[in-house]
Image (cartoon, rainbow, N blue to C red; front, side, top):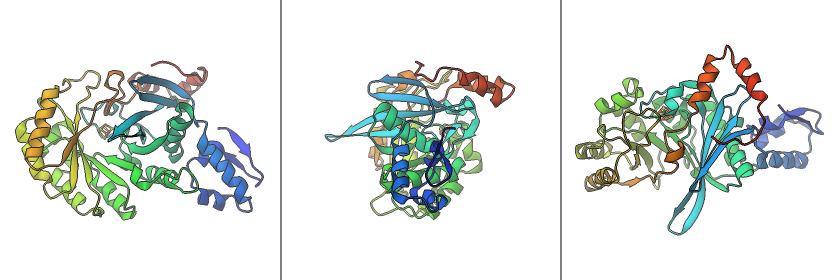
Length: 357
Ligand code: SF4
């Protein structure tokens, strides 16, 4: 880790500054010049990225990039240009873990298993990297990359504190979305923080328990009725609604009766269903849905009275779309190495340069 020695007589890792709010830094650096510390904090948040960029690929404005940790694992993020009604902005999709333990069968990341929880520094470092290394003017952050944010709750919460710190990145809480597979304990803990503006997205993907169990193992422990209760108890603001994510998989959850059943299940929940055409993972047993299948599902949902929209697919061709993150080859190498130290030291000799996928 790079170290800089500051005038307040302590050595502070630049990387670890990214995981702390300004007031936490002030507390740690008693007697330091506030002005000097603020400048250093701002400069750390301005970049460069705390970890080397090991891969990047761009297509149609979407950029997927990976940062490599010392243990050889990669943190993947996706920069997505957005536009609506004449306005344009940039959304950054960040990872909260390397891999994921949730095992959703349609998801590439699930194939890795849970390899690591990211620290707050590593999460904030993705924003820093997007801004500094790629010049992205990140306005919105969505926790929809690798991992289940509620499984790494403390670090995700700390990262959000840093992102929204007015003395630091100063992002609006309303610009941040946490997406969960539906972990009820996490939803309750998030509600308990009293962050009224943060957005919550829930990955539902099925109209009933039977189908959800086929594609999302979490449903065994936390069935849909319990999840709905947790959502109904969540303190939404009057102008807010949940984003319900629905990955549309042909032959699994895309029939008109599924749309009607879904609308009925969600009837008491203030929400928008975000229909996401399935992005095939590697070795997928299902194809992507056709345009006709997607439109038919959306239209049936609307007729059933459900507010819904469709997520435009971006980055599918280079595995940067929703549910497609994760470097399986690298994770296999990490697993087969006798220890992470071994693979870490072998990777450290790689040039710290941008490489194609
Ligand atoms: S969809 Fe999300 S929660 Fe499910 S395995 Fe993939 S990353 Fe994990």
